[in-house]
Image (cartoon, rainbow, N blue to C red; front, side, top):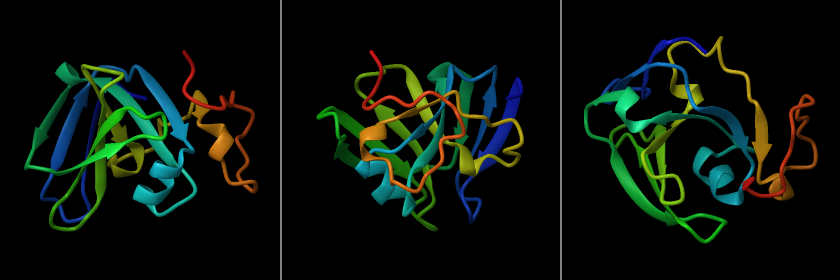
Length: 135
């Protein structure tokens, strides 16, 4: 990834700028990420809250993740694009949906989590796969 990245929703009502390198780049295969993304998984970068500036106001949905922990899923209230997840088990981190980056060329997942829910046809490309969230 780069030391500065920008992105936003489909309609442009919510935009963000990230400074610094992400703390993690992952693919999540949990059933909740599958449902919220409408796909087989969700590609995510984790960034410290202090490293992201958001313009516009995302809508929120209070969820309970497959782990049983609280997850706030944020999305554009106008176009519905999923944007961020805030996870109680990782305070101070914002998990950004990498597909919302303006330039995704720097995204490369370091690991796959919730592999126990992975669709059987998904190829993980050799990155480590964890059945749940690694401790």
